[in-house]
Amino acid sequence: QVQLVEPGGGLVQAGGSLRLSCAASGRTFSRNTMAWFRQAPGKEREFVAAIHWSGGITDYADSVKGRFTISRDNAKNTVYLQMNSLKPEDTAVYYCAADRGGKWYVSRRSDEYDYWGQGTQVTVSS
Image (tube, rainbow, N blue to C red; front, side):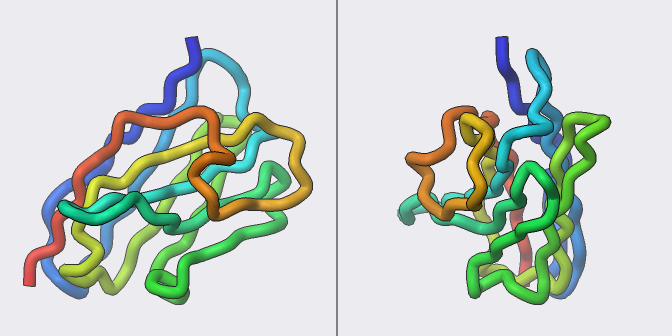
């Protein structure tokens, strides 16, 4: 059974930092593009960042570019999201996702990701 588990959420003050992790189990994800999405109350789920299975391609939403960094450790089957200079508008439930694998590109579309974590709450206080 494939599982993506995301510990690491929490409460942080504006300007602070937080690192999310997403550990995959049930199979290796070394050939899968991994991504982070988020959903704030009353809003649709939105793309945050993605990293190609090779690690050579990353993509970020404009709202987080320069503040967030996505990375992966294929040996540990884990993807990370380092979040710096956090703002109250970053408050949301953050979801880890993985695609079906083998693609040469990274996508911002949630329907291109087949595996999802349960989500972890990130709250940034002002």
